[in-house]
Length: 212
Image 1: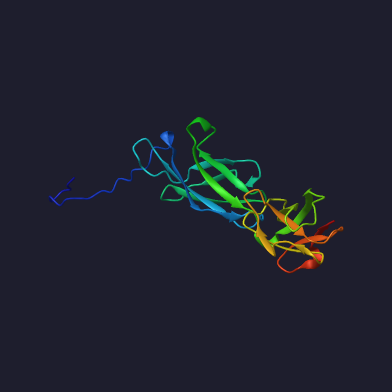
Image 2 (image 1 turned 180 degrees about the horizontal axis):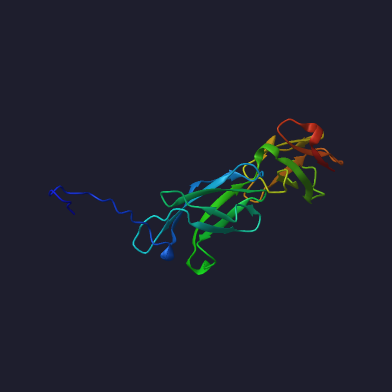
């Protein structure tokens, strides 16, 4: 454009994204593997774009997740068309997080977040005899199974458990829980009788579980 005298004039015309076609174009997990303690968080970042791949600012995004996961129901995108939200849980496991614009969940984007048992609160929750009445020949065995859970009843995998037993009973000093939070150990003896078996985390025998 020109004005009288022939001098050009520059005009800036703002163009905005087409909010009528806004939708979630991506959901990515940016922080994962949090402790299921109700405080530690996972995070997902959502990107909203229009039909022409323009980022959409100020767009409300709706969220939902698997049972036990706490996250905001809605959040609003920033100038770059993204919004990041956090999740907490008291339940360990893998959970799907979904995001969409409006209530059209058929077009939602999703990602998996993982919460792990809170090993800082792990303790022996149960000790049970699963094989008993062995011969005292140093070969025949009794067996006990230990279950380890955190403060919120999640099984704790990979947790070292300490054992001891009555004099004359041979038992591993430690053993590690499997994926289900349990570990089974065997005992032998050359001495007949009833013997107490104890199991605990670390060396805190005041909180040990015991069984005869």
